[in-house]
Image (cartoon, rainbow, N blue to C red):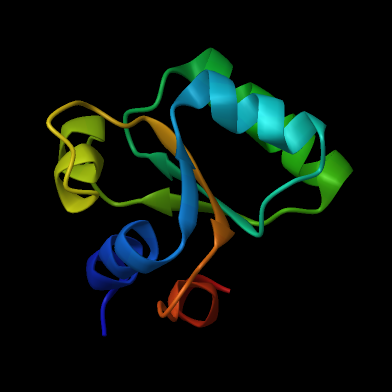
Length: 98
């Protein structure tokens, strides 16, 4: 099982939060088990995510693709620069990237 399939299963069967502002908000509250950011995520968002990941000890995975690619993997018709996996559901995404 590859990372893209793991992300898709987590979106379909688990609980994820999409969007950079909501991702940073969740990290400030210490919520989530894994943060995934797109390769082309804006630098200021990447810096914020990195800073809050160190404070909240939530691992960050950089998706090897653009925000358009990450949005399509999630099955959404819009770009996704960052997302939080709150509950992986049936997905093994935490084992793959962790």
